[in-house]
Length: 344
Image (cartoon, rainbow, N blue to C red; front, side, top):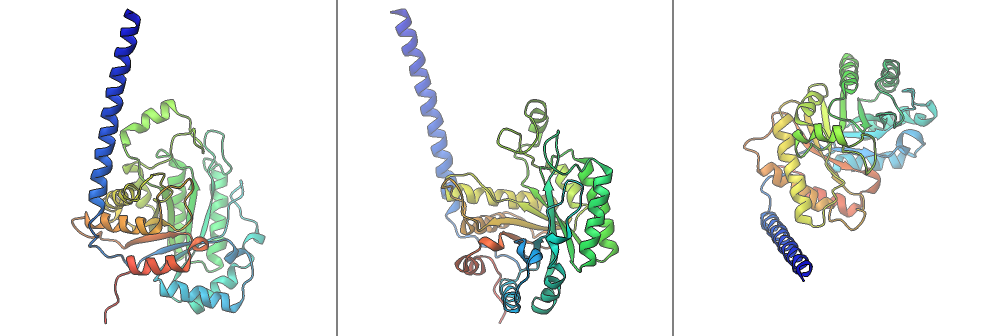
């Protein structure tokens, strides 16, 4: 009998704890839903980026395709296009066959989208603790990466856009590569931009992650998110920083929108006076039925802008991921929800 009473008592306490937790979760969801309802006041900007597929660099295209691309970029006020030109091989090179159409692409951009910066989008899975492909800790690899950058600048690209993943917030080799790359791009009058993950939620948790959870790439490794200090260090070494704010595993549009708003406000407060910032927004189809979409992302970014007490000193906008997944209806939605109205 005593054992039965004890079990019943434990079950009753567990039930109260579960009910309390569910009540808190319901209050949180309700609060976020209420916060989500007002229409954002802030408008977007005319400084915006687009990640574009590799075929533009690697395959031949007809004149009408280039003309249509230029029309798309002008109509949607895209200032920077990150044309996928890699990835790097393990040794820091890119085989010429992968970018055989690059020079023709640059010529077409000059003709059909004058003023739009075409950047060479280069990256790879960064080797961490024995896992990955490109070992940026090796000075010889970093040297070959820089020589590869020179090839793309010689072809006429307006900048180098790095996307190495994963990057952890103690990655001195990555920061050294940024310093040397910026010396190169500035000597040519070009840009260095870099894509990084969204900020950590709590910087102070990084030592615990490092001590108890392995690094690498996958669901059982701790997330490669920059701390505030690391993001400032990246911003001080790059002309543009694109935050990969997308890929949000949240079940409601209001929660996903809150995610975009929070990262927009926090990131622009942190580095918006130091460098140009693009907040990544998705047009790919979300997996697992999550609530992330372009409309919610743009609304969330605008809500984040509303929370700022002043605009950043440097240009800012959104980065659309990606050119190959954006439907005409989504371009129309982007123009209506984000682009500032043209003056009469």
